[in-house]
Structures are given as C-alpha cells and as structure tokens.
Amino acid sequence: MKAFIQKILMTLLVGMLVIACSDDWLDETSNAKITADQQFSDEDGFKDALMGVYLGMTSPKLYAKDMTWNLVDLLAQQYATLPSLALYDEVQQFNYRGPQATDQVDALWIRSYNILANINLALEYIDDNQEVLNPINYAIIKGELLGLRVFVHLDLMRLYGYGNLEERQNLMGEYTIPYVVNFDKDLVAPMTYAQTFDRMQEDIDMALELLKEDPIYQDENRPADYYLEVNRTGFYENREQRMNYYAVKALEARKLLWEGNTSDAAVAAEVVIANSGATLIQSDSYPIAGDPILYQEVLFCLDINGFADIVNPILTASDDGTNYDAIYLTTQMADSIFETDQVNIGLADVRFNTLLKSETRGLVSTKLIQSGTNNPNQMPLIKLPEMYYIAAEHYWASENLEQAITYLNTVRSSRGILDPIPLDSDSETVWEEIRKEYRKEFISEGQLFYFYKRTGETEIPFLSETVELNDEIYVLPYPDSEAQFVGQN
Image (cartoon, rainbow, N blue to C red; front, side, top):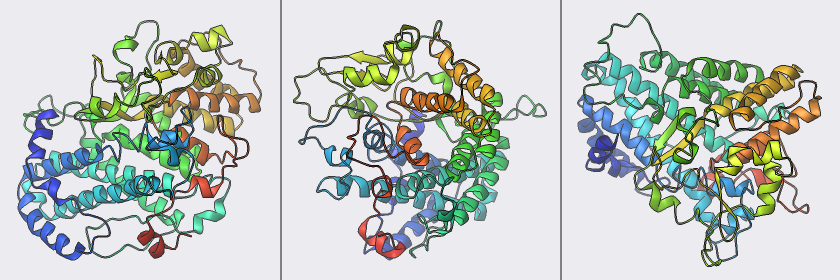
C-alpha cells in the first residue's frame, strides 16, 4: 500500500482534482481529460487512479479527521464542550454559518465532490479502454470505484440530507444531494430521495457482481494460481483497506437502513457477519492495548500517511487547558455513557477500561492515537459491530426481541461486559440498549451523529435541554452557490 501511495504522489493524477464551483471549470475539465487520455492508456494508469481516490479521501478535511472523529463526532456532542477559542467550537454549537464553521462545513461538500469527480473520470475511461486491463483487474477496480461512489454520496446525504426517513416517507419525494455519475462541466440536477436510493442500489448491485472477482470473496472453483499474475506487486493485499466485496455489502446495509428498510438492511448485515471473515474480538485474549482499533473487526479502513501528526495533537487532555482544540470526555460523561456505577457493565467494558485514558482534563479515546500500535495509520470507516446493531434493530422493530438481544449481547460479551441483557426484556428496554451501544462503540469513529439523525432524536445526552434537535440542526447547509442551484433553503 505505501509503495503505491508514494508512486501516486509523483503522478499527475493528484493535480487533476477538480475545484468545485471554479470559474475555470471548463478549461480545467478539458485539460483534465487531455491528461486522462494519457493516464488511462495502460493498466497502471487505472491502478494509480484508484489509489489516488483513496489518497484523496485521506485528507484531514475528509476521512482522516473531519468526516470521522472530529467534526462529525463533535456534532454528536461526543466530547466535552470546546472553548470559544477552539477551531471547531462553532460547529459543536451548530453555528454552521459562523466565520470559521462556514469553511469547515463547505469543505466536506467541496472535497467530497472532488473525489467523486475523480471516481467518475476513471469510470468513464474504464469501459472505453477495457482492452488494456486484465479481466480480473477490470472487474475489481471498477467494482471498487462504484462502491466508493456510493460510499461518498451516502455520507453526503447523511450530512446534507434529511434523516428519520422511515418515519417520514413523505420526504422520499423531495430532492436531495446531487448524485453525480459523470465527469462533466454541467451542474447535475438533483433527484428525489427515492430516485437517489435506487441509483445507489444500481451501483451497489453492479459493484457486488464485479467484486465476485475479489480475493476476499470465496469461490472454490478458482484455481490456486488465479491471482498470481494480477497480484505480483501485492496490489490486492490488505483488502480491508480497500472497498472490498464485504465492505460494499456492509455499505448496502448502511444505505438500506438510512432509507428506512430495516428488513433488507438486516439481510445484508447478516451476510457480512456470516461470510466476511471479520470476527468480533474476545476481550480476555485480544491484545487491545496494542491494537485499539480492533483490526480484526475492520471491514473497510483507510491507510493514512502521517496520521500521527493529524491525530495526536488533538486527542490529548494532558495540558492545562491551553490546547483549545483538545477533544476528550469529562469523567461525568464517561461514567454516564459506560454505566460505571454497575461494576459488571461499565468497569468491565474494555471500551471504558482500556480504550479510554485518564489525563489531566478528562478521558481521551485511545483508538486512533499513534503510539506503537500494531496497525498504525488506519482509520476504520466500517466495522463489524455496526452489522450486529443493524440486525438487532431489525429484530427489535419486528418484535423478535430475543434475537435482537442475542445480537446485542454478543457484542457486549466481546467487550467484556459480564451482565447480559435479560432475554425477557421489553421493547423499550431493548431499544435503549441499542442506543447505549451506539454511544459506547462509536467514540472516535464518526457514526453516532448519523444514528441520532436517522432515528429522529430530538434530545441527546450532554446537550442543553433548551436545544431541540430538528432539521435545522441535523441538515447541514449546502455551500451558497450549490444551495441556489438545488433549492435548499
């Protein structure tokens, strides 16, 4: 992976990133396509293009920081209140059009669509130049690109679109974020939520079919040397660091859940649980301190060059308060989240006793801190416990409470919790346990805000009771030029 990244840094592809809303868009598009004719004239060009997409996603403005453990987690009130001098205090207070927050929020949109431009450029060429690719490489590279296109668009929808769609099916006819499938100077007219979900599913279905060539997808009919030629350079090693077959299947579960289709989401999630090869840790035997991201549970992650420089200065609370951007939990927050008043639940939970570190100002998540870990520079984007929670939510909704509890207890047990949820618990109790698990599991992973938004929570822990969560808070504003085009008020 690192060898490919170093090569990509030397190519022209990085310079091809399209600056959204640029006045020079026409010239830049024409120049990019001229360069692309050369870029995609051989197989290595497509490999570099794919790796360039992953590299672009590792920007701190995207998945190395703001789209995961920083900005999106701050929206969920995951951490102690930032001081007014902090760079992200306006975002944490939902002041999206504050002097600092405007650029921070707009960057998520602009850089995501830059990534999508590069994905679409590669996809436009891959069919036209299919003859330069080994059939295995063609299928896997195209499958990954399609999966990544859905992944980025879905996160844009989860930030800039409506949530709680299961309870508000009337919104399915409203327009949502543009789903861009071409590398083109023309602005893309948005489709409705229903149409956009259908378009996502088309990409997912095609990606899954193509990624049956993925080495991670077991096919007993393949000869032993099937990947010998295409993997001579190790291009298909560490599949969890790429948009592999089961990452796409997990993405499908996530997409279906957002759509409000909990039944089909659970079907997809259970396929991942049964077949992905990822397994939950066993807390009594796993080297958690040396592998705080619990790598064996990772379905999709990004390899981030220089991650320590991005993470370590902020995930610290050992100072006197002058590190204004530090993010941490107060003791009271941690005690509440992990139920430390119950010894067999809170104090036994490795997410509390091992994955949090007590420092001067509070407790810091150790998941991403780069300090002698076994799997450095990895930012998890999809992990196995999410699939258990998706399945549990479906069984809760269908009143199969015992099966829902079984899924929850499986994750809780793997985390060291000694007291299981009783199998005769009522529906209200089971739903509360699902909510608790999201709060405990996704610290530093950027998923809790989406849970609150998807389920329509109007009040959340650690937020003032005077603040009622609604669409004005949950739906981030488009950049001004885009808002005028798509009609966002």
